[in-house]
Structures are given as structure tokens and as C-alpha cells.
Length: 290
Image (cartoon, rainbow, N blue to C red):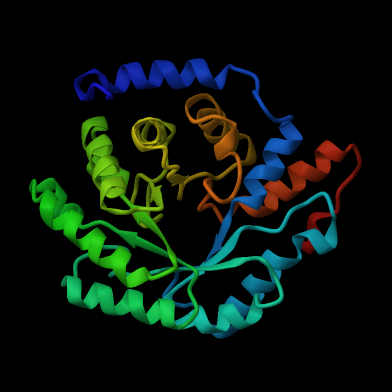
């Protein structure tokens, strides 16, 4: 059991600094970039989203590999529920998943009945995965039962769709809160725990990722169940993505190095990762097609 009182920010940062200096354990650098690419949920979540934008996003996500066999396609396309059916039709000949944010994303400030209805709508429209966000206000007030019951209700509404539970770690602030929220989400049925919505000032950080990985390891040691992880928001450069891979390697091991258990919410990263993969190939790359 992780000692919650020993999770000081200073100790976490020391451990991350130590891991960041380590060599990749199971992958070459090129393979690590290929892994990141294959784990990206290519995302558009703007009020200005249009059908055309979603179609173009689906085409981009599913044709990286067509342009160069060295570059994998992304894992999924993530959109609002109103675009789920369109995305599903665009990706029907591919292995890519359709993910939807649902359940009053990004604030989570709606009655649970409304959240459940939106999740059911998204699933009925073809969503393979649901990204929900917890009620941070309720959590910070100490109403953990309400947060747990909401996750359970949304998990039930997902049916066969996988559930990613967004903790919004930037608003939880402390390692203790992040650990407790991670444990709560896992116990309530999360298939993945996810750092952030990308809609607040502090999104994915290695510090939050480290604590969440400890919760996942603890669950695996206790039950044998493998929970996925998704850092999202704020991962702006290719090199910066490697610390997240190293953290997964060191804390969870090789079995988590796949897009069934690891995702990245970092759409701006995709082009940069593609360029890195091609750079590692040893020749000049023309990234104009990405």
C-alpha cells in the first residue's frame, strides 16, 4: 500500500529526475516515438468544430502509415458526442477507435442523470470509448461517495465501451488528492485513468503521472487487473513525451507499453512525433503531408 503521507512533491520530483536520466529499458528511442504515435488520441474539442474538421481529422489519424510505413496511425479520434456517428463512418475501414468526451465535459457540473444520458447517446452513436471527468467540486468537498457513485453509473452506461476517467489533476493539486482520486476511480470501474481535460491551466505533468502510476501498480499487485493510463494536455514536444514512456517502463513495466493500456491526449504532438520517427530513419523527411 502506497504511504500517502510519504508522497511529497519534493520526493516525487527527485524520483522523476532520477528516472528521466535513465536509458529506455525496453525500447530504442525510435521505437519509443513509434509507441507514442500509436497511443495518441487525435482530438478536436472546440465549440467551432464542424463536420469538415472531423472528417479531416479522421483522415489524418488513419493515413499517417499510408504516407510512410515507419509512422503508425494513431490509436483513436476523440470528438464530442454529436460527431461520434460521423467519425465512426469515417473510420469504419480502420482499426482506429472513436472516443467521445461525455458526462458534462469539461466542468462535470451537471446532474448525474444528464451525464448518463449524454454517455448513452455517445455510445449509441458509435463511441468505442468514453472520456468522462469527475466532479472535482464534490471530491474537494470530501464527498467521495458521490464521485464514486457517478463513475459507477457512467461505467454502467458505457456498456461495452471503455471508460477513461479524467481526474483533472491540475485542480486536485496535491499528490495525496491525486492518489486518492486515482484509487477511487479504479475502484469504481475505470478502464483508464487520465490526467486532464486540456481545458485548465495545469494539465499533464510527470508528477501527476507518477502518482497515478503508483495507484495502477498497487491495483495490479492487489487484484492482477491492469488499468490503463492517459496523460493529456500540455505535452507539447516530442522529447517531452519520452519521460512519460520512461515512467511507465519503470513503474509498470513492459506489459503497459501498448495502446490497450497507454494513451496520450496530445494532438499537437502527432506531427512532431512523425517527424522524429522519420529523423530516426536516417534520411530527410518531408512532413508537409502531416
